[in-house]
Image (cartoon, rainbow, N blue to C red):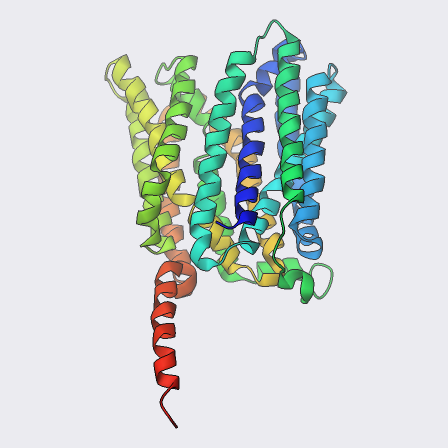
Length: 424
């Protein structure tokens, strides 16, 4: 990686490290520590999602017109203010307002960082760059969560203020690092702009491959991330008799698989077509849901049910490790050079929609409709495989298998001088 990419990756990891301090404890903080009740805590979580849905449609155009650095700086400052405000808030209005700032800021960071990675990479290095970002973000979240768990004390609101202050500081560190990055030029700032208001959106919606990728992305996030802390957690405790503490072990297993397997999986992914890798993830997750079904609906011992449930999260982690060097680079490769920010923001918006709908659908089903819940998400996982193979027919060879195209280009380049040296 070049110096710019190293700094981008470091800032991304540190911001994730800050988020890890507070994400696992947000519900407890609002509902119990501040004694604002479960309803307010639910509203706060909903505000996070709603704030993201409000700002993301506008962030992509701003990134393409102004560049990702100014947008990321504004987002980092907003997130920092939101985190600090959350730690200081004692009323419903203050907590909800702080959640809106924090949710909007962290949502805009995603497409801005993705666009910076795109600008500092090429199709040959982009896969590894996004894999590195995913690896470092998960490592940062995991380490931040572990350290935060040692500092937090429900009987001392000041311990939560410390956590939110650390999170706030990490966002400012991200902003400081970004200020030192020398970004290469981009055609987005040198020439083409969307021709008219809404033209960028119309162009995106007219791009069949991107629309199919967004549909696929919604199903991916709905069937996995949208169930982690809602439907699957409810199913585990209600149907499988899993202790709440075991949920933490399951999430730790998920993170551990990602951290350990990421670069081993990367070698496998780079040699295969992206569409087929995503299709394989659908099959892996279908197996994971079947194992979850055994945990809750089988007649095995409690120890077997617990092991099966933890294995479900581990298999999800394996699929995530396969997706990280696949989906985000594909979004970038599908985007015209003047619309990278809008494509990244559109895909981030799809993710937020899935994360908002997923818990609303999966939570009640996982708690009460155990058999239908498992069958539904086995079918969604198989749907991922179908949609991925269908998407593959819309992709060019370079978009579907960039490593093969790069090797072909190098072979052609090696032979061009010999041909040009022959006299006419």
